[in-house]
Structure formats: structure tokens, C-alpha cells
Length: 500
Image (tube, rainbow, N blue to C red):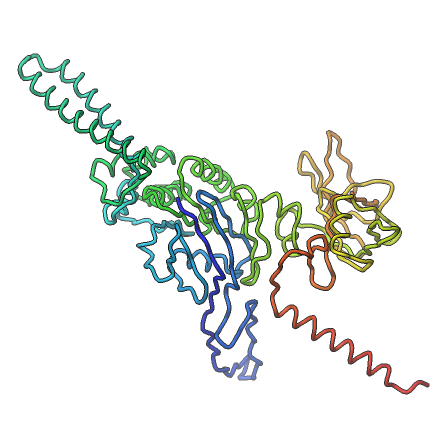
């Protein structure tokens, strides 16, 4: 278990601009080449995959990096593992800068998206391979547990000898030999306890064959794969193979355990089962977890904190509930939560020192908590994008008009797919034992002033949190400035026209 600090981490890949080729279509007709679009920033140094990444991961914390494909989450994980070189910044593990340290010397373990098991080895051999080739970080508590189990086995052996050997003299010799072994184990246990009392908790050494076996059986029992230890990977299901891959990483007792989308190859039922297994595993072992996924359900259920990324930039860091309830920008609000948040063009009004949101004739006063935050940021009357989650909308006598296109009965609730002001909107309504078919009907939708989210039309930021530090993609700022200059020129050109 160790603290991991990522300080101003940047990853830049050299950009290679391939020469344009001549493309020919049917009958030799020239066709314009397709221009490849990049969602990452390109600088003179190359393509920036990760931008100024800062994160302090506490001992034993479970951190989840989440975001769409190409956002830089796997690249960040690989930099922690040492599989990718860090362009700029510092990576600190357990108080030591490890930028130039080889992956094998970082005391980390990694579970990949593919299981990466040795096909010619049994499950037992796969799990024991890292213990055989590398010195391990052995805790004194583990050695105490192992020696106690050995003492228990020796005591059982003494009972069996008493039942099977009738020769008293021969029995006494064997019992004395076993007692000597038990005495050696007890003395070593006392030494280990003294080390722990003195503040020493582990040492680095190669495990003995007996300790390796004990460790493998211990982890196999933890992951419920004891009965598969003699099988080879080809005779296992996908979920069982993933358990073996996790077991092979855990058996080393690493300081940091890295997981790169380990559940993406499993079906929905197995994913749910393995999520529960990982939560149980986390409670049993003292290890710092860094988990990468694009599935926001995994992020919400597994992480102590989640890091939402987009195009190499960190969008928000916080607990799952904090990110869900208080998204810092429009991207985070849409990415976290299923179904996705609904968005409306609205007006934020400041009247008599109170804030309201208005869509057409429907006007709602905001909660006191939201009003205080807007007031602290000196937010004035302006056009905004209003975000409301599907389960925070209600059908009532007041609200905005919407036409129901599709009615999905989900059992305890109904998902209404609607058209509101020309846009698609999803509303979740509890059935409460009664089902109403709204298809083709026009109904009114309302919302609570304490459960809405207010996003700036200028930069998509949540207006309640403008006072927080925020690093934006510079390309977006450039694009807004360009659009502003074009609009200004168009206005000047229009004013310069001679009036009729």
C-alpha cells in the first residue's frame, strides 16, 4: 500500500504527418483524400495525449479514471506502470520519484483488458509465476499467518502419528522432531511480532515453496477459484479467467494495483458479478487501486473518487455522489448518469436579489443553496443551458409542453422518450403500481428548482462553481475567440452597408 502522486504529468507523442496519397475511385476517377480528424491538441512537440494531470492518491484509496475512448486514461495508467515514458512532470510512489525507474522495480501489478494468461500453464502455475521469478514484499503479518498454519498442520500430523504408530520409542522420536520444528516456528513468530512492535512491517525476499503455496491458496480462496487450480485457461470461462488474472496480480501483494478495463470483455451478468468481487477484494487486501474504465456505472460503484477525463484534460475529480450531484461542466453532467441528462435553452433571471430559471412561460425559483452559490460568483441575468436529469422531471399541470414518442415500461418505472421544443428528452416516471400509456399525448413537464444544473452558454461551465480553478482546452477558447471576431466583422460589415 502506498501513496501515489501525479504532479503536472504531460504525455506528448511525436506527430508524424504522412504525405498525401493520390486516391482513385471507380474507373480511375480521382477522389479527394479523407482528412483525419484529431480530438487531441497538436503542438510543435507533437500530439498531447495527457495535459497537466495532477492527482494525489492516498494510501489504500480506490481511484477510477473514467472517460470516452481517446481521453488519455489508459495512457495515464501506463505512465504509472512505467510502460509509457513521462514527457513532463513527476510521478511519486511511496515518497519516491519513479520517472526513471524500471516497471519491475516499482512494486506494482497490472491487470489488463485481455487476460494475458500463459495457455500452457495451469491456474496454480499462472498465479505462482510472479512469486517464483521476483523477490516479494513480504509482510511480517503474512509470515506469522503462514507459520501459524504450519504449526496447526504439524499438530494435526502429531495426532495422526499417535493413531498410526504403535511403537512407543519410534513415535517419541518423530514427535520430538515435530516439536523442534514447532519450536523454531514459534521463535520466528516472536521475532516477527517484535519487528511489528518496532515499527517494521515488511521485508523483501523470495518466498519459499511452502510460503508460495500458502499465498496462492489464500488468494484462490479469496477469489473462489480454488477448485480450478489444476485447470488450464482454455478450460475456464471468461469470468474465471479474469479472476485468475486478478489473482496473479494480487498474489504479489503490490503497493499499487493497476486495472485497465478488466471487465470490458465480459457479458453484462458477469460484469455485475465481477464488480461485486472487486469490491469484496478491495476490503480484504491493503492495496492502492487505480482503475480505468469507460463505463460510468463501474466508476460510480467502485471508486472512492473518480477522475473524469476528456481529450487529455481532467474535467473533474470527486466522490461519485459529488460528481453526480454537482457536475462542474456540461460534459461531466452528460457523461455521468444513465440515461443522459436533458438540456434546455433557458433564461437565468435575477429579480429582487432572487434567481429564477425560465423556459417560455414556465418560471421556477432556484433553491437557497443554488442562489447562494450564484450570488457568491456574481452571476447575472443571462441565457443558459439548463440541465435536468430524467428522474428529476415530473409530469404535472404546469411546465413545458412535450409530445411522447415512445413509452418504455421498465417495471418499477416508465421511460418516456419525448420531443420538447424540437429536441429529444427522456423522462423517468415511477409506475407506483399503475401504468399509463402516454404515447402520442402532449403533457407538461416540470422540475424542482433545487435539482437543476445551470451551464454557461459561453464555456459550458457550471455557473455555481465559477470560482474554482479550471483548466480548459485552449482550442475551445481559440474557437470561441474566432467566432467572436467573425461575428464582430459581420456586424461591422452590416453597419458599413449604405442605407437605402
